Image 1 (cartoon, each protein chain N blue to C red):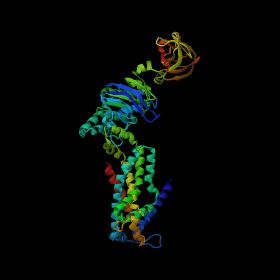
Image 2: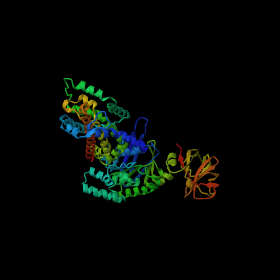
Image 3: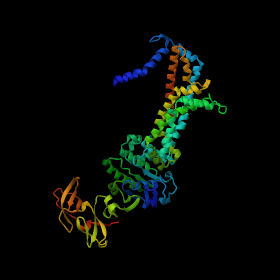
Image 4: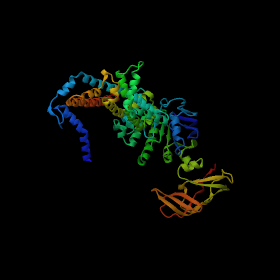
Length: 255
Length: 339
């Protein structure tokens, strides 16, 4: 068991370690490891306006996606739970899980068709990008929330609260939301990670000034190896930032 | 403060369960247990009174006020649920203080009241604990304190003891009764456990298939069951169908001498007698010779299946020795008219 675990962890960590090593390497061509040590690749990225803009765009899109997802998913999951018939619940669950099954390319092409028309010329707008991320990320959050609600026996808790004198708003804010706080935080971390890393859809629908970090990073792969490694390391930092940021925000909001 | 239910009916759907024309009054400070087999409608009755269901017909009055159209939150009822339904994210004291918070009691005041309620429940030092860190019995006490802290019109208990193990159940019964007495509050207690109902209640209502069969004090229910079902459901009973013949009843186990004054000659009846009514000595007119087919030792007594010609008698005796003959005093036999 221990050996399998060690092998697996090595397998997971090896690319990241290589990237880290490569990002500080002077030159790296046709050898196992790079030669020379330098910080110039990071400085170059820092000096590049495109990368800096993409970095902040990614954080903004990620934050907005998280907020919008929570605002949609919580009432939606609650409504599914409240839905009278089992059939309705099953149908809705299938419907909200659909975006997972459909490749983002399909969605992206749809977005291009609809929003590059003369009546709806919104392609490239950042709100459209956020909307796209929400569509793709929502199923993950929904899945966690719906499962948690079912497991919590919320009906009985709400019946108890109602018998004690709680109206709908009191029940929702005093009982439902706090009961869901753990799954909400877990779900939001997933949404944040998804939004930071999303490439397929974003590459198709982002405007020139609203490109997120992964889209810009693709350009780096055509340049020096060290530069590409450093750029990828920054994406890793960005992902960690997004996950911890959303976790902290979620915990604070729930408390 | 009373609960009054009149000709209350509810159906879950055509042909499905529900209740039919139930009338029941529980006076101030009175403790009424509702029993019956599962699906008899006892939980439906509780949900109707609590307001979670709207009756198809009939009325509910709480403390004299009609409840028609009032949502559960406006009925001012203390409800204790089967699994206590404590809010898992709130500490014990916050759980108890919650109904006061909803009623606009100031924070310091509601913490004081909730703290006192926990103190009375013997949970003085447990206020800061989350429900998950409390035992079943402690959760039960918190739930009871929460249901009473806002001085509700009445108390509804939905199988509150079913989640406890047998050892705690008997002790909790006495505790619930003591708390109910101290608050002098009309209480409806739904349970499937007839022993629990007999031991705790001022009066017991027996439900079957949505209909009320009998409402009586525990002793009356046991000694004078209204029909064959109640006789069999409440406590153990020997039930033998028979026909009245003068001052005797002809049954499969022979002619039984008993009080037949209220029954016509030739009428079909069920003879009902309790297992503890048998005497070990050969006395009086009703004597049975037979042998012990099954012997269950229960500590304070033995419960015997006593095989006699024509049937098997269920008998209880404290006697440890051989049993070859049993006798039954005529006054121990109660005749129930056959439907």
